[in-house]
Image (cartoon, rainbow, N blue to C red; front, side, top):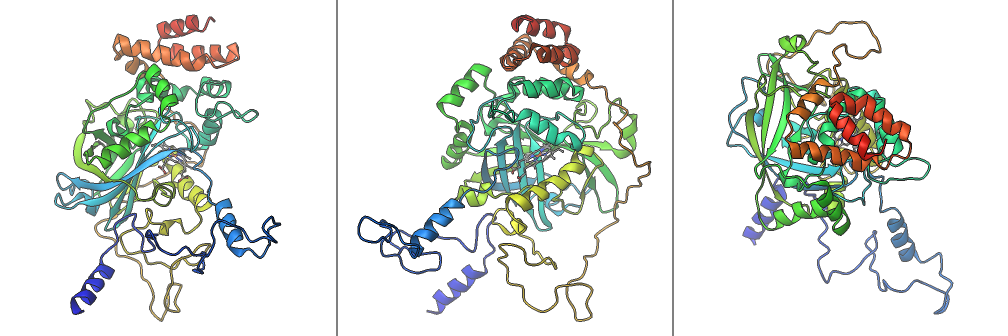
Length: 509
Ligand code: HEM
């Protein structure tokens, strides 16, 4: 008896794995069916009616509860990145990163930090096909002892725009047109190419998304990039800019356009299934994390603006430094609770990692938690995948669907009766000096085309052919020739005149 009690006590005290829930419902086979209030249900197949042929009675509370819950099963899908797949695992640093950052999870090579990753497509809705041309999301949540740290990245190193104020326009232009809701998950339409033809900073991104990188063959064989620039700070208060890169252990593999679109029809869930099946088979899904670093004092000496997310940092000048490896080895138990309700945010930072002034990143920092308060409700931080493993203690209270029971009478600070106190900062704080006019201006080093041209010229002949073919496959859906022409003249001809000529000819312009 004593042993059983001790066992129960130990189990009760065990820390929860991320994504696990103390509210876990087993619904063991043979258990009695009940209402949400715990009342036994004696007949789950027949509604309560007047006589055997009806009508149904309003007093059929079992029927009403069941249907009312069903009516509310769907929550709003993410405004972008709606379709995705998630997996749990761990991250381990290779060497202490003490010289660069004081972040605790980046110090001890023996420490395994639990992680959750969600991969996603961006443009299509929750039921769309996985292999259509698109950017892919690669979002990682590290459950560290200092709270959750998220790298919310993509599979391509740059982005379409460099100022967050343009993001709603970009997404409106990418998604289905408002009058007819077509096309549901493709950029092949007037609005996208109209927007792009007026947005020269998107040129570099087009050379990525319209290469075969836009149709990855597996989430296990896809790179990840933080895209925006972050700041690492060590305990002396010394700061350095960093850009994140994830490299898959299996190497990068993409589909060509024909295969990607055939598979989109045959198995719309191809990428989700591929990840799930590999983990079920016990195969190792691994990525290495690298960073590029740049001294902040060097930022104005570059030919490009390092905080402009339409640019990559040349790897010969800013080499990739290995940081650690991530292994994904556990599938979720319940997709809705653990994956659909997952909430990532670039503002989920730990001491030693900070934000740069990158204007996209600054906007993202507001947007994610804001949409999550709407999509999931204000208490989304307590949902199983989002819950911090580090202790959470603050005076935030109440709100819809509050599940915590707060003890005591003090819900404010400061208080003469005790209560919570501020943490003491470990090490010297990083306090960047910022001065300037309050203004609405574009950064002065724009040069929207050089990196796009360099990328095109570095492609082999097959890659160039695929880029041209993939652009034609999309642009052929544009019904207004004047928009096709603008896209070719303003954007594609800036990459390469020959490429522009090939595409014009293929489109019969
Ligand atoms: C200012 C530009 C951007 C804004 C305003 C923005 C906003 C959003 C919003 C509102 C969501 C839905 C979040 C949710 O419902 O939980 C989202 C998802 C996402 N965004 Fe962005 N985004 C921006 C740019 C980017 C960039 C540049 C990247 C890549 C570095 C990125 C990567 C992602 C990923 C991976 C997700 C899916 C997260 C998940 O799996 O739940 N976004 N974004």
